Every structure is written in structure tokens, then in C-alpha cells.
Length: 147
Ligand code: DQA
Image (cartoon, rainbow, N blue to C red; front, side):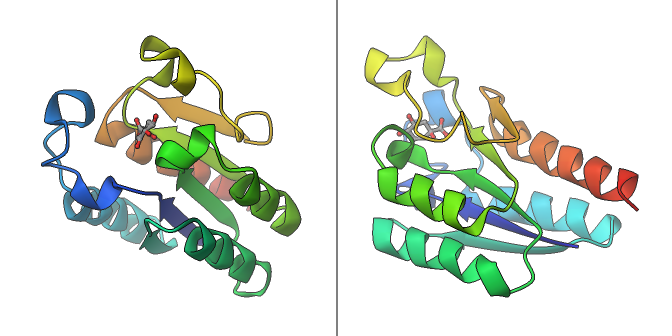
């Protein structure tokens, strides 16, 4: 099975960016931990980061015929603004899990609304890098359960 992990804007700065909010792990650290968990479970994992909305839309569109089975996505600030990325996920109709390092619900009111949560299979938030790893473990469990 193939899982695509999509990281939205400013997540390339992880480790340096507001570490009290987002933690000390870099994006490379998180991707390496995800890659190890995937490899142990025979899952093909690809990670993709962009600061540009259209690049995120285009990568999601490409999952329609590149063999992707699941998407894990941290839309970052686009969580709260992007109808276009939401529509791309709806168009490809693959199951996805919404991920956040922080818990948006304990932050500013403008972070309380997500354009993704009502389409997502699940949402994992507030657990730092573990949010990603727990989401990937959940997908692995679902893949194994479906044979
Ligand atoms: C975030 C939360 C968003 O509100 C914020 O804009 C981000 C990161 C998180 O992972 O906690 O960039 O998605």
C-alpha cells in the first residue's frame, strides 16, 4: 500500500519556527521517523512539502492515478483558508487523515475552523510529531485489517 504525506506552508521551518508551539523536531526528523515506521510495515511512503497552494493542489490531483491509497495531510495555515485544497481531496476521493502538531482548538479563534475535518477519516492534533506517527500507525492498522 502507498501513503502520501503532505506538509503545507511553513512546515519546512520546523525546529526553528515557534518551537514552543511546534516542537524541536525538524521536518526531516519527522519524515525520517515516518519512513522508518512505514518500512517496518511494508508501506510505501512519500512525503511532499510545499508553501504554494497550487503545488499542494497539483500533488493531490496526481494521486488520482499514481497508486496512492491514503493521504496524511497537515494543511498548516491552509487548514483555515483553502477551499481549493479541500476540493482537490474531495475530487480524488481518497481517504485522508488531517494532522496538526499543535492543538488548533486551544489557540486563536481563527484556527478553530477547518475546511478539512468534515471530510477527514480522522483528525490527530496537539501531539507534536507524534500526531503524524499516530496517524500513520492508524492507517497501517486499517491496511492490515483490510488484508
Ligand atoms: C498547524 C496549525 C495551523 O493553525 C498553523 O497555521 C500551522 C501548523 C499545526 O500543525 O499545528 O502552520 O497546522
